Length: 141
Image (cartoon, rainbow, N blue to C red; front, side, top):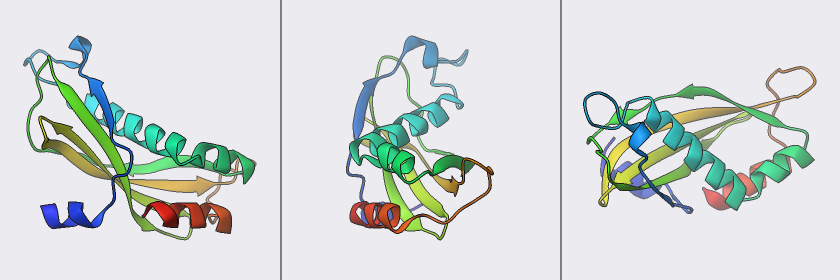
């Protein structure tokens, strides 16, 4: 993904954290699986800051991650401070495409897209976003 696409997506709530020693693998860099945890941290931070967690509950919507991918750009070694951020790329009828970035020393170390799907908690089936949720997404896109 080129930097132009990153410039088209807003990443309004970057979250900074220290890399934990336990995030490393036998090759002395961050294990590839850990990046998916970083992406999750970014999504949780985004949903908390935008009050979407509460809105999902109020509107009786549950979300599931339907797809998640990661592009590894630069290795990260301990000790390091990273910045994790998530932005909305596209709002679908019942899905949301988000883009995740993990930066270290100002450089993108990893990035990837995720597809989040709205579900009905009673049936577990996909359901359209409510107008209230869609309007909330729009203000952050």
